[in-house]
Image 1 (cartoon, helix red, strand yellow):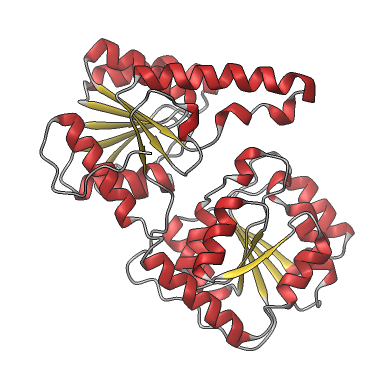
Image 2 (spheres, rainbow, N blue to C red):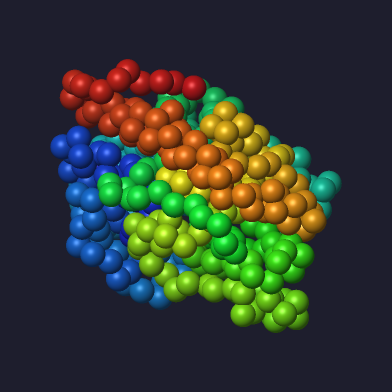
Length: 375
């Protein structure tokens, strides 16, 4: 059994369960996700789901997660956050399980925003050293995007990028004339651009709406609504309640016209970002307005021809990019290009196949999937 171990990811997480876990389960491997959050279904996409009791702070989760990981006696542990990496290595030492570290972000820069500039190089060096040490102790390191392998010298690294997963039966958006509905899908916060987004919305025609499907991850929701009220925008904004990923995509494809990815400059993770929201919008047939500075996102948008690149910190630039998408024929062309890319070159299938091949090789089973691509 492969244990997907999470210290923070929810039970139905898009990458951990709906992409990685589902790919492994579809290949005939037994998979369980151990997550700190609940409630949750007993299984999802072939992945058994198990959660801890609610209300535990993150440090208080560590011992229950470790104890349960050891008790389950998995053949492999696939861990998704740095604290889960440590727990996985400890559980692997106790049980003999193979250990895979799943790397979603550029962790050496995570403390930059909290530290004065003079201390950032020292913090980066320390975190890079920790990543390297943990990577060498693991059996493999899986990378969610290019540009992360340098932090894990000496480790076996394999790409399984956050590419698009198009749900069966998802009809793409049918673009038509009329007022625009802008979409912000997934986690939202100041660093993900809501202040310039609201300022841009105030510059756009009063018939332009904003639909937010996701949760505020930095505690700024009250400030968001206060600023919207100050700008007279409240009636033009809907913040939808939580919904399953498939339902969110169906609503996006049914109602939205333009997908917004507005990561703000100044964070290395934003420059390297390969976010679900980009690929989800492509799957829904929506053109995207995205940051020109974000090399990962910008490269995909240029290659696929599926949107407009702009300065996400400049409300006037965001408003101009949206205005340039007023023509439904242009939106339809860009959206169709994104959907084709999501179903082809930028789809999840090849990434999932590499993940399956990795776990089969760790278990000693002959892989019937493509050879591993090391990075």
